[in-house]
Image (cartoon, rainbow, N blue to C red; front, side):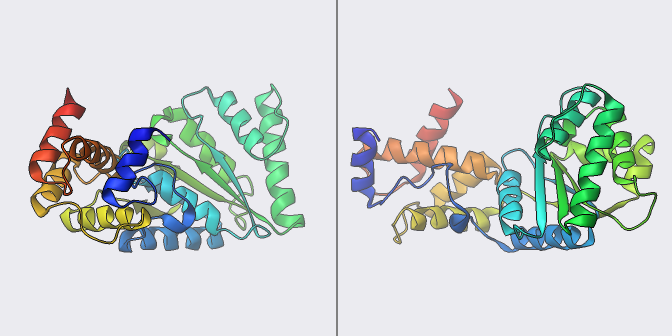
Length: 272
């Protein structure tokens, strides 16, 4: 940690920097829509169905996915996370195989067989539910969605053996509404969305991060919070950035409160 960071912590009464992106599961900002989304994901895991999760970039999708994976019983579920979604079909199957701890083949047919055998082995013999998560799926090419349908349908409409979670930015929903993807779309039992924060949630989020850093007293003036919300559009990643920059601007100006002027200067610095 730099000398400036140490002095900043001392100046504002922090035990650690409040807007660091590395936070643990006990420190997540859990608000009603987040809880509902997590409950829905857990419901689909129990049902072994197909779900979609969409959120604007930086709005907390990755945090929700981490919370979901961490909530799964280690002896009941086997999560397999894949985010290599801009590749070819065979490379996608290879990524799925790696995520399931398989040594991938160069043959698509053999890859599919290996994946299905692993899923069947986990579900039928070891009584463990595989959870296949495909992240950043908004960039999947159209043929991939039919591949997913075939993969999810390998037991020919008998009891489902695994959960398939297709996650991405809102463009994913548009892709799934295309008639070519109707067969897959019909099998989705939960369409989960995370939205950006409103002004109230933005204030609660800022206070939550300050409390995690050891400060209970307010730091941001009301008009400063309004400016942060307006600039960030309620996207938590952008809130973190402008709030962190505002801290350094206030520290350099020897201010003890983040006011509107400070936030405006921080926004200018970010946009420059």
